[in-house]
Structures are given as structure tokens and as C-alpha cells.
Image (cartoon, rainbow, N blue to C red; front, side, top):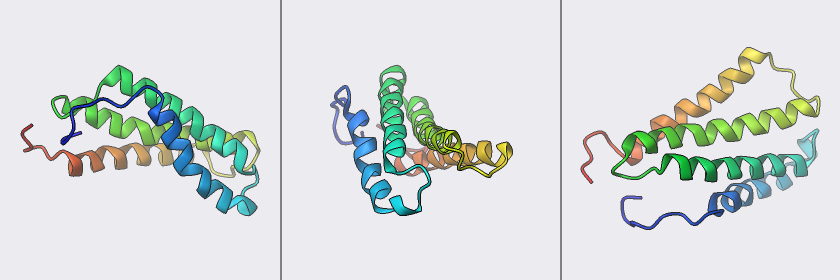
Length: 124
């Protein structure tokens, strides 16, 4: 985002998120109660949501607040769909507090990583 001024094409995150998570799901499918396809579907839904967030928030170097919100909401959305898919298959034994805590921790981690990419003292 700092180097190039172009915008991501529509649908790019819809492809990028599942394409990066599909090999992991396929590699560890013998450990998954759901099998790999529902989790790839959850990644596809998260990618669709990420494209919507990208259009709504329009993160950029000039809009650091939007960039930080996007960095927090993308992993939170991905973890929400992932855990919901596992819960619908009956494979979650975690308490609701632990599930919401995992989603919140993903959001906080994404938000903190945005400070590595865009330090507060960074001037565009």
C-alpha cells in the first residue's frame, strides 16, 4: 500500500484468502472432523467479506484508521467463519467465552500488526 497507488481489483481477496488456506486444509484433512471442503467454503465467505470490507473502508496510507480497522476485521471475520463452520459440524467443545476470545484475539493481533506496517510516525 505504501509503494503502489493502485487499488486491489474486485474479487481479488475472494480468491486470495481461499487459495492460501485451501492447501493447509487439504494437508491436514485427516485431522479435521469437517473435512477440507467446508473450511475452504468458510475461507471463501471470509474472502467475500474481505472484498466488501475493502470497498467500504478503502484502506490506504492516507487513511490509517481505515487501514487499522481493515487489519483487525479481516482476521476476525476469517476466524468467525472458521469457528462457525466447525461449530455447525459439531466439532467445537470450547465454551462460548473461549470462542469469542479467539475471535477477539485474532482482531487484536491484526490491529497490532498494522502498527508494524504503518508506524504512527509514518508520513505518507
